[in-house]
Length: 340
Ligand SMILES: Nc1ncnc2c1ncn2[C@@H]1O[C@H](COP(=O)(O)OP(=O)(O)O)[C@@H](O)[C@H]1O
Ligand SMILES: [Mg+2]
Image (cartoon, rainbow, N blue to C red; front, side):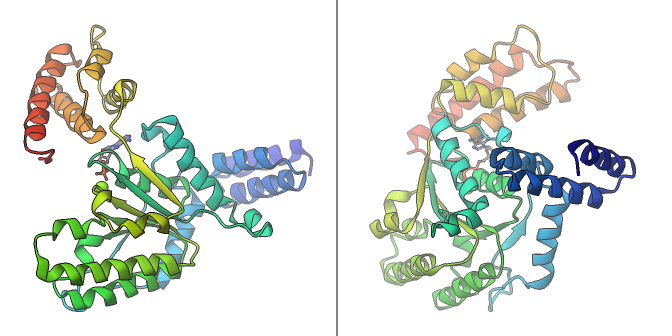
């Protein structure tokens, strides 16, 4: 088919609102580009075709997995051990330093190039550790990766599956790994810092250490197709052996002045702003704030505008919330960095 013919077919599919046909023709065209070794163009076209996680492909994927595999549950409580979630986020939702973004993009590219890598006997990095202070975007980033890869996120709150009967924990972990083995997911083991939280309880410490070692062993032995992410706010309290278990370790840092300004702009996007509002000065005055702090602050400012029936956000609201959040931040610093 000539390019003109393909475009005509696409137009026809569009006017008939036939999504399936549209995707089929587009995929055929991408394949023909690949055959011509136009690999970059093919990849760009594919990214464009599946830019939205709501695209057919993503829905078909997730439904297939969801339909076939029951969610594992804790024997005692009956609670689900994991959740399967879908997100529709993009890189634009994430503000992060360029070098971190490159690492994250590389992780995605490797996973998407699994087949090509395999022909060279190479495998993508599949085991990653996210560490860094609360509110810096570890959980959020897992959602972004899930969106970009158009692969559902399996969310596991590590704390929650460490059941009150520690004996059950090994069984729970086995069930979780059994589940993820059967599909292609982005798997997030969130808040894996359980050892730190229970440090005072010497009686249980040995047992918990055993559980964590057991978990690390399972990570080591994992050979499935999924991308595994472990996230922790306290990497220093994890077993030193943890560092060599991961293909990639990303340390999430607090945003610098420029990044804070970008975040503030991002979070205030939904509201009209007064032309005199100087967001760059707010960026300067929020040193030490995490993205999550900035988000809360911006939400509060917007609520003031909306509730008071004003048309635009002005420096009055921004300065008010800035003062409040700076006080809050100072209080937190005084209390050893605790978040509230
Ligand atoms: N780097 C970031 N860029 C944009 N938004 C962010 C970023 N980090 C955090 N956020 C916002 O703050 C919220 C809380 O962050 P979260 O990912 O839960 O932090 P963590 O898991 O590191 O404690 C996120 O849902 C997101 O809206
Ligand atoms: Mg988190």
